[in-house]
Image 1 (cartoon, one colour):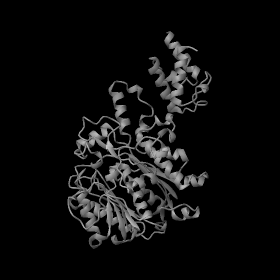
Image 2: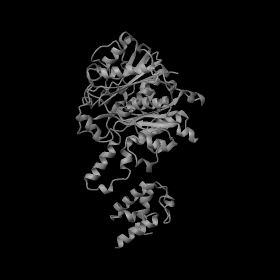
Image 3: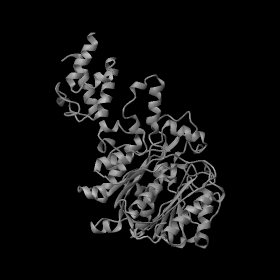
Amino acid sequence: MSEIADKVKKIVVEHLGVEESKVTPEASFIDDLGADSLDTVELVMAFEEAFNVEIPEDAAEKIATVKDAIDYIEKQKAA
Amino acid sequence: MLQSAGSDLGRRRVVVTGMGMVTPLGVGVENVWGRLVAGESGIGRIRSFDPSELAAHVAGEVPEGPTAEGKLTLDEWIAPKDQRKMDRFIHLGLVAATEAVLDSGWTPEAEEDRCATGVMIGSGIGGLQTIYDASITVHEGRAKRLSPFFIPSALTNLVSGHLSIKYGFKGPNHSAVTACATGVHAIGDAARLIMLGDADVMIAGGAEAAVCKLGIAGFCSARALATSFNETPERASRPWDKDRDGFVMGEGAGIVVLEEYEHAKARGAKIYGEIIGYGMSGDAHHITAPAEGHEGAFRAMKAALKSAGITPGEIGYVNAHGTSTMADDLELDAVERLFADDASKVAMSSTKSAIGHLLGAAGAVETMFSLLAIRDQVAPPTLNLDNPSRESAIDRVAHESQARKVNVALSNSFGFGGTNASILVRGV
């Protein structure tokens, strides 16, 4: 796992209060990890803060799973 | 008044079938009440922040520690991930509400029952620390980083909101905000909703967590807090004493389960007592000071007596607003005027001497103390009343509890803005 993936996972565990084992790449924040719409807003903010990136609203709306988040951040960081 | 209007609905009686509280004396009704009657104090030097740059250094804070010791371990009540979405006043409110609901045994599953159960939990101020923290985030140019939970964490009616979600209560979802009278207004108004048929059960009360730097600094600026007892915190709250110099802020929550009498009887619920009277008034005088003779308080008490249809002589115990400020003697004036020749028969104490002033939670906690005074036939003490600033025929229960015959008790709460509320309870 990349450093970014590790950090994303840690943030998800911390914010949603879920067990680490449940935070798989395919896990959906809302369907699998118990998040509501406000939780996902907060999560995206936490990613922005932790990785020092901007995630515009239209992009944030497309981040539904752990993998979506990792991919988006990796792409931003590579750019 | 419903009853004086002769309405059929006015005959719906409202009783208390569950109680919960979190105060500076600890968590849990029996725990707090036992310590209160024993004459313990929950006042100490402020622990949650360094108060040294402020004039007042003392407050009543909820003790943290093991549940078995009657202290607060928040993780056992609210999941840590949810705690972050709520101001502390919501935490304390939910702890007290959970105790009250479980105590009442009313956790309905049927849709009809859930729709007949409402919530009315207020707060004097709401999420003050949350607003402070968010203001700093904005001030630092990080407005876009504000938590999406900022607003729902700060909103005063959100104990009601969270509680309704937790137990599926789908009846009236309301909240009272009347500064230091909030607790009595919430319980009195919720009782009225039951009388009017809007609900059969209401979870009602108040929650407050304003012992933060902004809250203490604000009341310091208003010259409202005790500042002469920073080295001896337990002596700082001293209602009616000649050395009193302001109130001591406390935090906590008090919640009752109110229920229509037949509804409670039908399910065999434990009944603490009945809400028999409720009165309100406004001073129309000054934003923080009561008028001479506290005539607003007098009218609130009179209105409560009228709604109950009883005379002052039937009241055995008064839980005074008694904040340990100059206004104590004005309340005493009003109570003396109300009781007239019966003044020597009644006991009146201020339990704020032991737990401080819980602002929006005060009236709810004190209404429960009044119910427990009836249950146990005891008047809890006014601590630190060493030298009354003036004599009175009314026994103010200095230092130690007194065994008393109490069938009816009166609880007073008055708030900034010139708002007054009085509530009368009786054993069933």
